Length: 204
Image (tube, rainbow, N blue to C red; front, side):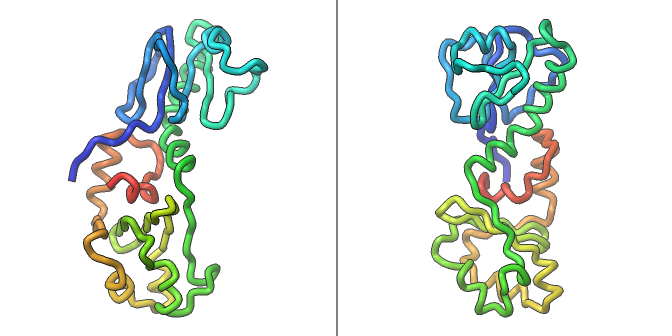
């Protein structure tokens, strides 16, 4: 399976980005004529962001403007801050993107008081949209309510749950089974610097 990832962040700038290797999941817009802040967004340049009048009380000590909107110095303003800030935003944009859209919940047999397979019926209901089975070690369920339920299958095995029986309770047509190769190749192709595993289910 191969596909193009959605854009998970956006960088607006009017001066060149220095010592930054562009990544495929971030949209780069130089000298924009209009702005859209629905994605995690970085505006590069202190003087530039002030000129846009996005917020009246911008603080040079606070890089977060609001919610998922940030600013960073241009290279001519602060060299080290510029390089580190732009690169760190690119690395962190997917996390901001996913955490802004999805609620992640760990389903644990002890914490959630799951004693048998019958107790799992609450989680395996009609609201399941998609399932990602990572190497029979982790199961991630995306619901219609934009929640992701994470199951550590190794933990369930430890407590003597029958994993095959559990998986049979889910419609097989919505399960994507991965022996690990898909996830590894995805990370290599897009130069991911973070653990995307729990969110793969949202982009299958």
